[in-house]
Length: 391
Image (cartoon, rainbow, N blue to C red; front, side, top):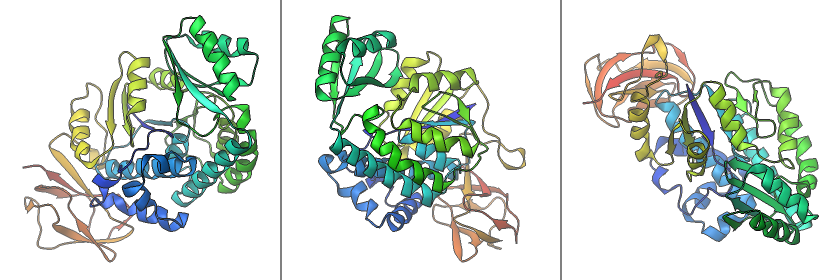
């Protein structure tokens, strides 16, 4: 049982796209740029930390980066049993499992970032991480502040984020220290996210979410709002709206996934923050973070070493550490290259056939075991075409 998790704002970093420029999954960046009407690739390659800290840039780049990593992982044939995303990452998860189309996901994230940015200007706020206190003690500190400050994120045991006005957060921080907090750290954000100060953003985004019409999905997503798994599209219209001004119950999301039999957690995207939270929350969790192409082989070995199940793929096959999948680069009719037969040695870049007018090129070296798709079959993007065994 495998879960994919997707990071939120704050995981972005300068140059996080550099390792992906020559990978086929970079095509998602070009698609996102066209939809957004701005150069997302330039942000991923050249934006400095200050530029990326802007909510509007942070959310878009983190969203696109995570989906680029997901695309690369899907090309290997892996699929999750459950998904979840932290704050912004929930939009990534919904796009990942098809509840939102890629176009709708990009547009919603752009609107969300702009709405939260504007709400932060209208009602300035700050956020701080409180370390070393139980959840109820942090809530007590906020109540004792008697000001505009609330719990914004239940991230992991002993790791809770508070948010509100600068005065309110300072008062609550002082009370948290009196109650025994080991440390209180200010976070570099531009607003009091997931609190009532985001109500203007919630009102603005509600209509955009409704217009996107989230669809039902085969793979459930565990919601930040109630820490329950949801697969019905009509439920997400209200859940995404509520998420803006409600606390992110990430610790509870992890516990829900564990209760549903998930022990393997793979974080897809920049950072690695969620991997640390999973380790802190679930003692038995196996965790891995994938943020660069070099880490894809690490995932294959990690899955192959799992004491649980290996993902089932087409024709009852299993993907082991020595096997690779070649997948369709797009939609269309598949025509294999006649001169390549089972047992042929394949090198990176070799053409195995055509899907429509697109060449099917191998991303791996190996020995062709067999074609999964047949001549004349109509394929969808990323559908498996052939098995290779590594040399």
